[in-house]
Image 1 (cartoon, rainbow, N blue to C red):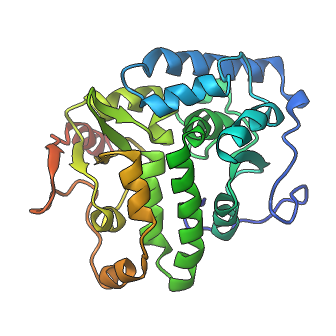
Image 2 (image 1 turned 180 degrees about the vertical axis):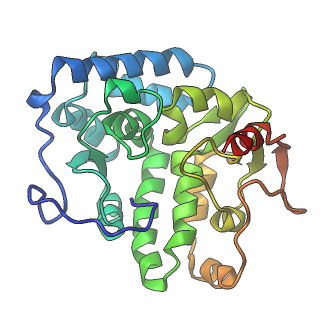
Length: 289
């Protein structure tokens, strides 16, 4: 999904649905080593921070093998578990293409992997973010249904001109969502799970706000794409997240029309606050610019 409005041209190598061959045999040993380095770093960090469905998904898909996964191999296990498959795409794809893939239980993943000098930050999602961060959660039946429902809802949102509201839901759940568990807060968002520094920041740092999930609040809240989030939203369960998505969004969109955006660091009187963030990190970064 393109969370930054832009015109994306389809490469000549892409098919009508924007899929391409993964060409797994073309990855170099250096590229496989980048994956292995990132994988070890994250799996050392995530126990006690990542949610159980993610950790179980890593094992179920045998992503502990060294090197970049072959989509053909992991799709066998993934399809048996939840009916999903991973398809390779050349990078960001148009929103309509993205939603259609999700609605049909296909997850579009970037084919390329970052360079060794890009280990800590990459604006455009690569194969590590897409496969390590996203795909293990698709082994969970409830989250798999949520992703399909989101794709179906995206196709409807485009017709209403309120895609920006729905994009915020994706951002604050699929990419940067936190889950409440009896053991404490856990990560299920791929943008956090694939980032060493944000895996710690999102759970442990006093800087960001952590708020109970509220659908309309989330869909009005701005987000940032260039640094750690200043606010995270916490769902009580993956089933609760799915239940919210299965409702008719028509009435939700009507209530959102004309409502102002909420700043990324704001706390509102009706918010259920888990952590009132100091915003120290964001303030320091702003002072440096």
